[in-house]
Image (cartoon, rainbow, N blue to C red):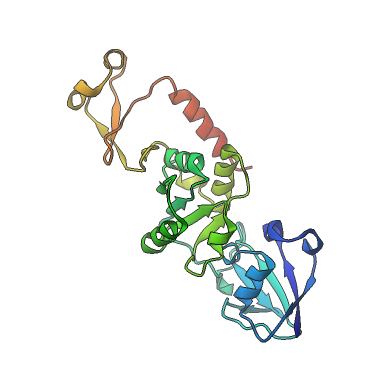
Length: 246
């Protein structure tokens, strides 16, 4: 039986047993397993990992663990450029998400802020993984199991259970503050929202709304009509609150 010493850093400790948090610990293994399998056996999803050092040398997920290795595992760095070290999670040119069945409110908030986010309250894990693969989407989930699947390249385990804290968490984790475009997407279907002339939808507008409002927008996908009604100021206040880095 081989023995290696692992040390996980920062938020990766969220997934460790208390006796392994924030310190080196011994990991025993048979043969020469891949370091990816070892990390996931310990309890950390590979999608959370951005840098692995073995005996102070960079390795990728295909590295096979050897007896006596000292392994340092790091999450995504938010403020340090590690590109010279070949991070394991290269950035996507356009960040798009797909949320699991437990994150419906988070999906709505992401759409409110302008981020392309798929969501269905009946989606199976296989459907989520297929969409993520074919459309290059990042999986947002409360299910650790889906992130351990070998088909998943991009994913994030959402820590918070409260939707407002979840959206703050995602903005910080993916550094999305400068990419916020409020009301660009339909909160119901994720379609693109565009301006529309009042005269073109006059028969679809409630009588009192016709009287008091002149500016309207419409979802190109589902046809839902939007205007700056009574909830607009509350929504703007919510956006201003969550967009401030904490």
